[in-house]
Image (cartoon, rainbow, N blue to C red):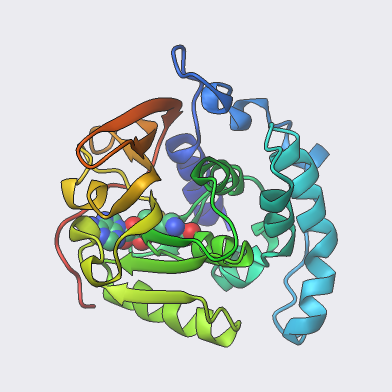
Length: 271
Ligand code: SAH
């Protein structure tokens, strides 16, 4: 119990958005710093592992709606389609059983192998910044739990997602199939090189932080396509960028503020 609390506290400190002085939009205010103490806002749901899945969804609906109202709309996400997708995606089915009761709190949680499922607000923010919808094709680097991929799938997007850690890639692929997300395609590889055979994409989302923007990803964007990517030093804070491919060779970028993501690694792990 105490070990779990300590792990979470460390995670909270390490992975939440921090206030950026010169970021240019919504991410300039730290949602976590503004979050009142969990006792006053979070609806804590007891573990319900023995309850069948369809009933569980109903049990968690209130907590999920509360998160969407407070932590998504309350922090400035205003795209109704993104808000609906966040309302529909059952985050409790993407977190390890040990953390079920925290599935709808607005912070990252451990998913094993030193990785995390992202903070819901950040998932919503990045999704909104991609500006994608029904029928668009999106490449995601860093499948992790596959929660972000599922949120995109709920928008009607065709998702191509790559994960470098074998067991996470496998678990994600099984989970997505079990939950019926047929419009998500998974691959176990180093995402640095993108997914050439399926390019070009309307958007690219990177959910681990490299120290530079991988060039192959830029050139797998359609003209007018958008990439959302955290860039910065390993272990430090990074800047979240929205990059647009203006034409064949030119890109424009704006900073969305400071964030902290797990590192973008280059070594493919099989087990
Ligand atoms: N989008 C995820 C967040 C996962 S954390 C979710 O919704 O849960 C980031 C993930 O990126 C980790 O699982 C990590 O293993 C993966 N990753 C890091 N470097 C990578 C690379 N070069 N290629 C593909 N995946 C990578």
